[in-house]
Length: 347
Ligand code: CP3
Image 1: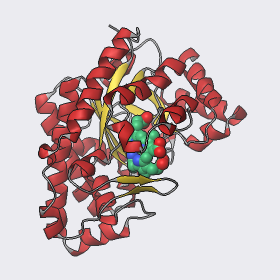
Image 2: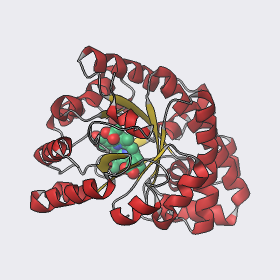
Image 3: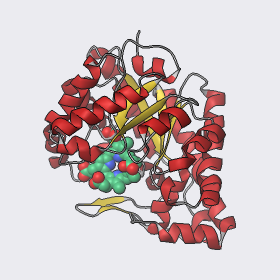
């Protein structure tokens, strides 16, 4: 069966540029909001395999992207480790913060929680549902947060503009910080392996806050743990591509690719397409990088931006995507427009 998303990640030729969009399932879709309104909380959707499967398929049925991404959240890992994750409307995620070596050592081992099992069940159901509904060319992506980004939320106890608490702990007590990063690296390996075993055909590691780190810290807290995760997954699942997303890495993107061994890399919208085609796409397949606000705005400029991304990246393996997740105010027609543009585009 021809899954052009997987062909491109393997570096093979495909009949056209494959496309999916980060946060393609979510609040910009009325059919998602309807299901969300009937649930008591966001995490109830995440831990309900039937609903998670249904939500994952919503954008595929409507737009026909080349890959589906498991409907879940990166904060499942800290939730399974006992951090009491909750989503407060209008405020984003809130967690019970952990801030010392003692706190880290008291975290519940990821493997003891039953919660990840529900996510693996969602993966199994999504694979079966894609087949049953005739989406034979649609690949399924599993994902996890990266240790650094998960540590950011766990130490801060929620979101933040610059994650000062996590960064300053990493400077003040790198030994304690490493305890947390190692625990998280083991959890991420187990979690992604569980998803691959359940049928995920590619895995993406979201390091949404990679860009707040100084260069040396980037090597230590982003590159080193990611390299360990990629090596462990590659040993067990040599045919499952691993996509890294070190958001905000800027000029460190090539270093990240070279040192971590990821199969492909997702580019944010701050990166120039011309630069990345030379400096990054010569190392591995790339994915990206439309500004989600350009998608929100629509109009002629949206077509132009999509066209430029396609022409700058079309020479080598490329997956069309955004530079970050779809904004919840995005008109679904704009998504439709981009899907048609990319799917009809000829080099
Ligand atoms: O891409 C997809 O369609 C798959 C689902 C997915 C979600 N979150 C669903 C979600 C994925 C891949 C994520 C990843 C995620 N979650 C990241 C990494 C990517 C990024 O955005 O940087 C991060 C940092 C999170 C943590 C998170 N989850 C935050 C900060 C928030 C609140 C902000 C917001 O947009 O409301 C969430 C909530 C969340 N995750 C929602 C969805 C659909 C909205 C919750 C709701 O419906 O109320």
